[in-house]
Each structure stands twice: as C-alpha cells, then as structure tokens.
Length: 307
Ligand SMILES: Nc1nc2c(ncn2[C@@H]2O[C@H](COP(=O)(O)OP(=O)(O)O)[C@@H](O)[C@H]2O)c(=O)[nH]1
Ligand SMILES: [Mg+2]
Image (cartoon, rainbow, N blue to C red; front, side, top):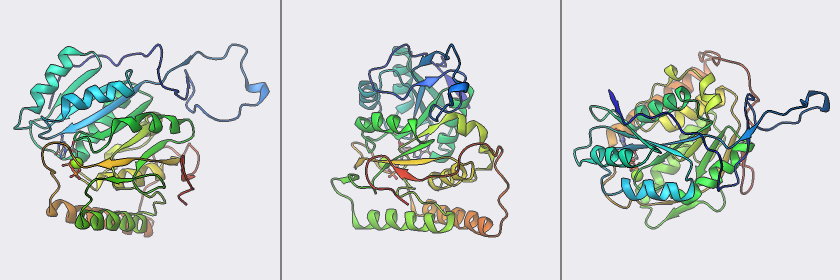
C-alpha cells in the first residue's frame, strides 16, 4: 500500500458550524463537573478536528463535486480518499484534488480490498493523526453532505452518530426498489437479532465516530472486509460502551457509476454476523480493550428514542 499527498492534519482555528466544543486534554466533551473539580484556568476550548473518508472504486464522475460539496458544509474537515486502483481513473482525480487543497489526502491501495478494510484504514489514520471525529460517507452522493452538521451536532451527547434512514424524518429519496428495500430491512432486523443492536439503521455507512473511543477498541478483532463491516463495527462500538445517536438522513440514489455490491458478498456478510452473534450468546467475546466509558444509551437526536 502506498500513500500519496500525506500532509499533517490541519488545526481548525474557527468554525462556521455550531460545533460541540472540545476541551483539550479531556476525553469527554460532556458531563457535569462538580464545582471543586472546575479548574481556575479551564483548558482552551477549540473546534474539533474532523476527518471524512471517501472509499472509492470507480467514482470518477462523483469525486470532485462531492469533495466540493463536503467543504461547503464543513470547510474545516480533512478528506481522506481511499482508492483501490480504480480502473476509471478516480485515483488520478483524487491526486489532483490533493495537489490543489491541503484539506485532501489520498491513500492508494493496489487492488479492490473491500469497503470495510477501507473504513478500517481510515479509522487507523484518524487515530494516528489525533482527530476528534471520524466520518465515513459513500462517494456516490447517496449520503448528502447537507446532513454533515447534524452528525457533528450529535457528538456532544453520543460517541457514534448514525445518519439514519429509519428514524422519523429519514428515508430514501427517489427509487428504492423492492429488492433493495427488502434486503436493507432484512439485514437490519437480522443484525439487531444476532448482535443485540438497538439502533435502527445498522447497515448504512454514513456515520460519525468519536476517535478517542476507536482508540480504545481493538480494531484487529474486526473480521468483516466488505459490507457486514457496518453492522460488525457497531457491535464492537457497543461492546466498548459507546453511546449511540441516530439523526435522520434522506438517502439518495447514486448520481454516477454503478453499485459494487454483489450476491456473494451479501451471503458472506450474513455468515459473519451470525457467527459473531453465536459467539456473543455463548459468551465467547473477549472483554473490550478498555472497560472505561459509559454504558450504551441508544437514543435519537431528532425524533423518538430508538429503544
Ligand atoms: N476503496 C474501496 N471502495 C469501495 C469498495 N467497494 C465499494 N467501495 C465504495 O464504497 C461506497 C459504497 O459502495 P456502493 O457500490 O455504492 O454500494 P451500495 O451503495 O451498497 O450499492 C462507494 O463510495 C464505493 O465506491 C472497495 O472494495 N474499495
Ligand atoms: Mg452506493
């Protein structure tokens, strides 16, 4: 694997969005401090550092306008494109974007290695470069950038914010074929059942994670390489005591290019989730790397509690 255009992550002096503030040197931005624990000189408050990853395989028609749109909504965010040697030249476009903007970096991988491994690589990058929040988005405009501020806003209460199609106000715009709807509803019920998840949208990848929580998890335990990664990582986040929020999004059909999901991948995903569920029921899941952090309190930020 090679990485091009690597630059140190940027510091954000100011922000156009109403961000939850991060206090330097403190893990959790929220929580009640007792008067005795309030220092005379509180640590400086700064805007959070945000990394957004775009995994790409043949997204040449989408990448450039998507990066522009992201920076319209979150000008301070750094974008990491993870391209798996796309035959359509997406990697070259990513290099051009990185050359033109200090906010864009590219990780080139030699071959199509799966969306899950791309997101894992981005999580490791976020940890390595000390970001506060890490967001993943599909690179086909299915995840409209206008919802980015809502994801960020939920991070003052939650460790993982899910851009959700299945909470009030969320949904799918345009055509959502019966087959796809059935698959999506089915996989979500399946994941809730096997993995004990209580969140509604467990299969979408439009999410924001608190990097300090990712840091405390053992990412080497993640088995999924493809699409079951979305459910599996929620399982491990829950295992690590993350608090979950869901904010409604309107998913859109991809603007350009074609989907890369195929039947073999879907079957593999079902098996990985079932195996993890069986290990969970049999008590064979090792304890989290660190036991710190609050228990799961699954809640929606906009709309009723998910349960
Ligand atoms: N780097 C990388 N990106 C991938 C891979 N498979 C899918 N993607 C990207 O992951 C995102 C979701 O994939 P997509 O084909 O749209 O899946 P769908 O929305 O479920 O149909 C898109 O940005 C794809 O370009 C892969 O193997 N490697
Ligand atoms: Mg898509």
